[in-house]
Image (cartoon, rainbow, N blue to C red):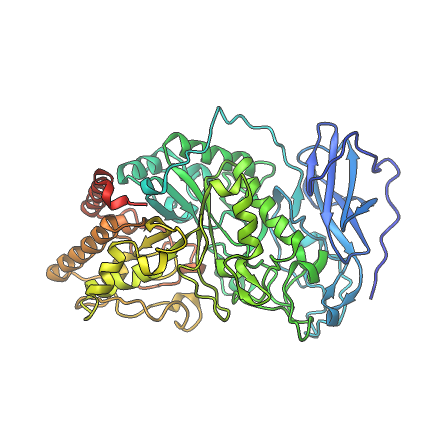
Amino acid sequence: MTQGPATDHPADIAFSRPERMIHELGAEYTGEGTHFGVFSENAEAIELCLFSEDGTEETARLELPSREGSIFSGYLPGVKPGQLYGLRAHGPYDPASGHRFNPNKLLLDPYAREVSGAMQWDDALWGYDLTTGDDTTFDARDSAPFMVKSVVQDPDFDWEGDKSLSRPWTETVIYEAHVRGLTMTHPDVPEALRGTYEGMASEPILDHLRKLGVSAIELLPSQFFLDDRMLLDKGLSNYWGYQTLGFFAPEPRFLRGGDVAPRAIRQFKDMVKRFHKAGIEVIMDVVYNHTAEGSEKGPTLSFRGLDNAAYYMLSPENPRFSFDNTGTGNTLAVAHPMVMRMVLDSLRYWVQVMHVDGFRFDLASTLGREEAGFDREGGFFDAIRQDPILAGVKLIAEPWDIGMGGYQVGGFPHPFREWNDKFRDDTRAFWRGDEGLVGDIAQRLIGSPVQFNHSDRGATSSINFLAAHDGFTLMDTVSFNDRHNEANGEGGADGHDNNLSDNMGAEGATDDEAITAARARRRRAMVATLMVSQGVPMLLSGDEIGNSQHGNNNVYCQDNELGWLDWESRDDDFLDFCSRMIALRRQYPARRTS
């Protein structure tokens, strides 16, 4: 099925030729108007839709007049920052061939720098009729009333001379944290700032990080993401944020005062600037392996509607179905040159415009998949390494995905560093008292050379950690034998089932002083092991104050006291120990060998 573009446009709004060549995708404000550019390999036409200030009224719909190299574009004089807009793509609705064009569905611009409004989950967001469950049944309802809108950004900002800190890896100590988790219950963070970018870089948080001695904060996903409809139906939400839809837009739920555009860019930049003034680098956890649109049965929100067959990997046997290496329903086709360009443009944008210092790539093995599987010499890695902007920032891989051959610890090329789960597992098991691990823990102390001492890679290729956002916290590692994830609504079966934990005599919190003291000693031993090992140490936020998630090792959907840090119960003695261990590490450079 093919739908033609609308033709009843207001006469006083029209595209014109820009005075200079413009190559940008997305919306670029020129000072006199805005240029819009969108990639689609298989669309027949793309329309730009303008909306009223509150996003409720579509005020104009115009077909992008120029097409060159699969890029549709047009220049609108007079369109200024703050303008809300969306896209509609025309082409064949032919799921059997991988095409799912439906101009009734308003689409988020993949290059949108900001978003406005809140997603309202309605059946109209799907490109097919959900009542039948048959994705060959084209749905003609307009999704615009339920969709977030793209926003033309205001590029003006005073950085006051801010520059990247470029701290050497040998002097780096990473602190993994969530914007809401770190700030929501902190007694000294003003209530209005809790859960926001401003609260993240408020003086109480900065004072804590300076006292602890960390040099970089690694933010869990802060690009625009969605709450899964399934979670909302259960009264839960996507707390961690690993369902990205906008790779250029800061997540609006972390704004002070709500999702009022155009404020996200300014507040995010303010946060980065304050961290830099405190001597702390900002690393972003980014998700370029999949999007929030899910499988072929998911909604049509952006990429699927613009060009499903170009943006996503599809089953080679039957392109009606998504090819899923991520466990989320879809996989971005990063090997496609224009999809790779989008990823690289996004990364450069966060470095050059937003001043972030590096990235941690979620399920990074997916990004290195070529036709024959994972390839450390593949196109994505080659593109990163030759890029003069990206090759000089901190790049960290989560070196696995769920596909065949996806576990690649030690397999990434320089300059990537990698999360080393072998360090986590061997350190937990060794201090639990498991037998036969002396040789293994020795390997971890000297930077895991079996994994990393090759291809001119040094010990700092290993990101050593004891706990991360997914899995038991450090306190829960010594407090629980079993996971307790019942609150997630999945029968307690979700999350890791091999935590290498030990409750040391009581499951969970206890008043037994001997058990409490033993747990404290073991936590100290593990933190000491982390800080004297070669490689780059990473702490999970809250581990330094004894934070517990009460045995839930998968709080991805718990945007509440279970997922937030418990500052009221903080262990100041353990915080002091962690601070002294980080200071000790800095005192002895031999522990920081590159």
